[in-house]
View 1: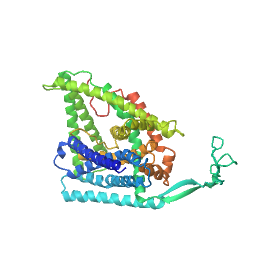
View 2: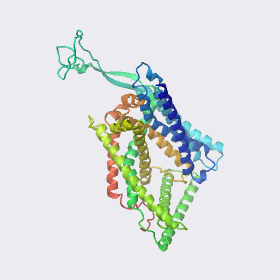
View 3: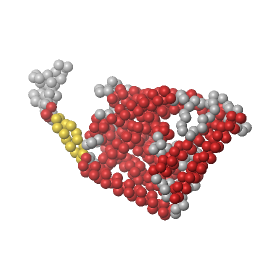
View 4: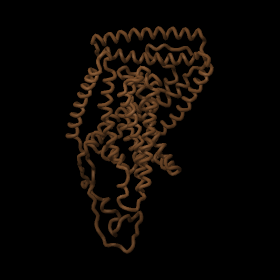
Length: 509
């Protein structure tokens, strides 16, 4: 038993190191050249936040493995020698909440501060914003915890008659209990009036996790529901809309000239907005125009990239075109595989969560059988399905951001991602990771039964006053399925067409 727990600790340490190294690699390769050799604090927050998000998702498989460490023990107290998963869960999610609501906003306010100001002024300005946020959050948490920080459990008083110890036991479908009288246990025939509500106050850390989960669940339902469909379908329709052949030089010059004119217009608009910022007239209209320009710049960059794909230049032009073709084939393959995973997720939610009683445990059985084949195979599949939901959240946020002006878009691009976009997406991932874990703990309750996560997210969370009804009536699951269905219909109707957003120059095919 001790050797098993030691192995689990070693695996956890190794995985944490690998996750940290991988996140450093992502930061180095995704960061914008303008952020090189500077903005060290935001970079630390990005790496630390991504590591916390990844580790929190991997903790559920670790929780399952930790439960299995003592399930076959033959002596009492064996489970006391396993990892303290409940304390680790609460610690991870308290750190998660601090990063989302305090550290990341501070880093963003500091990074986006006026570069003409001194470091001290930028720090003071960011600290003021975070202090206001902290006071508001503390007041809300204190008031809500004082008024509704209790969990209500429905219990039933059970009683049964006694009888002398029999010489033999004869149980069958007709007689399931001891005794020659009623063929049903007295406990089962208890009156409905014997039901009562047992109330207990939740711990403050659990309540913080619960509220953070609700906020994340709203975002997860919107972005995840859209993303679960648009992530694979976007890749598939990207292949369908791919450039079929290399354009001529005259076509290239014509398109490049149009893009150059658009770039000059955006440069003038950016200069005008910067001048308004310096004059202090930063109203609602100014912020709306800034977001509109940001979207136009992103679309312009996409057009430039598409033009470069359709007219590769240089000595290795043929090689570049071949890599472009292979890239779109890879998108098709990944899109088809992603579509299978998305359909499996939607089917599992309907079969296991929305239909009562469930028609089948579906993916739960799949993970258990994979574990029977090889110990970590089911765990790896489980972790993959959880990570896929996070990717769907990011894809959904990007899609909604491109179409709604009031939503700020923060694209992640290889070698061209600014720290504010990094911080925004890390905050989104951290906030939604709590909901992803809660969602997975519910969706895979059979696979993750008797774990610390099940206790926190399955029992306590779903019994809190005011919150339990959201889970009792499957509000988030239904919203997730509805948005996924609407997005699928949208892509089926319009996904095959070339996008024509306002102000975007279309390239010749």
